[in-house]
Amino acid sequence: MSIGINTNYGNYNYAGVNNVEPSWAKNDEKDEKKESAVNQQGAVYEKTAIEKSSKEDDSKAIYKKSATDREAIVQQMKAAEEQQRNQLMAIVQKTLQGQVGAYGKATGNSMWQQLAGGNIKVDAATRAQAQKDISEDGYYGVKQTSQRLFDFAAALAGDDVDKMKEMQKAMEKGFKQATKTWGRELPAICKETMNAANKLFEDYYQQASLSS
Image (cartoon, rainbow, N blue to C red):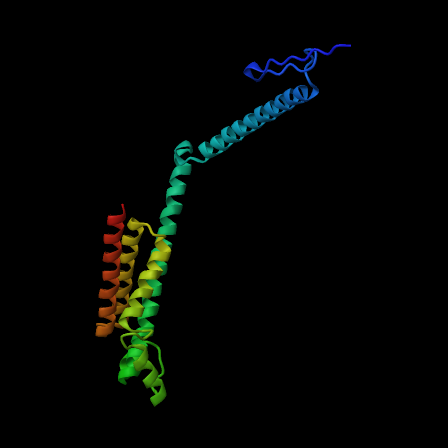
């Protein structure tokens, strides 16, 4: 019995023994067809998912909504922004109240202590701590207090330049309201704190313009 072996390997088409296609070639062909079918199914699924997601996003788009719905969304956004401004104004007034109270204790000025809602009678240890608090690096000092006000504003604005400008206005309004509430000009340390906070805002705007 003679066995004919095809030794023609041209173009990598190996015919096998007696021109009979080897089983591994058939298996490879089956695997390729199976893989192709799976890939096609995956492509169809992916396309369907993308189209579905696109339709969902499109249905959520504000320009697709009715005039009444759009107006409601705008009002909700305005209300949220107003709430943020009011929140910062309240933080400013509370922070200044704490600063004024510490200032009153440190200087022995009973008027500021009383306006800040603090105890008029202050012992030596409390006064010493208050003096430390309003010092250059103290908790109620210009540096730390101005930084806290700026950080509060940045947290509410979410690093949005336009919103930061609104927060700056709210901060200044909070300062004016505190002055109006107490019926007199606030201590110099409070004004210096506001100036330092405004400087932080200006530095932020300058950095943002360089990054854009």
